[in-house]
Image (tube, rainbow, N blue to C red; front, top):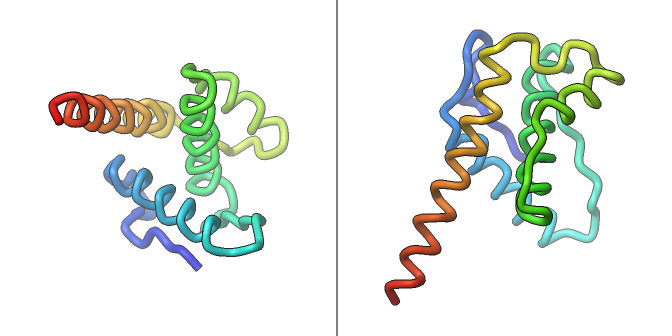
Length: 114
């Protein structure tokens, strides 16, 4: 089981906490035969929905090189209307994605120097 205990009931965690959580999830999935994942939070929608939107867009960024947070949220809201309940969560999705891109650029620049 993987948990993110630093996500407050009110507010948002630091973007790196989400990226670290996704990295941990990736490592767990690689080391087990089960590929099923259950994502949950206390209200069943806000934090888990935010995580899933971010995760889906990170995967899309890795495979397609583009993101569409608006459409990801729109699609998620078909099944769970409370996903990304306010602009703070919406902006947070972009902050996490931007943090990820910055880290990848720094990594790429480091590899180029070697």
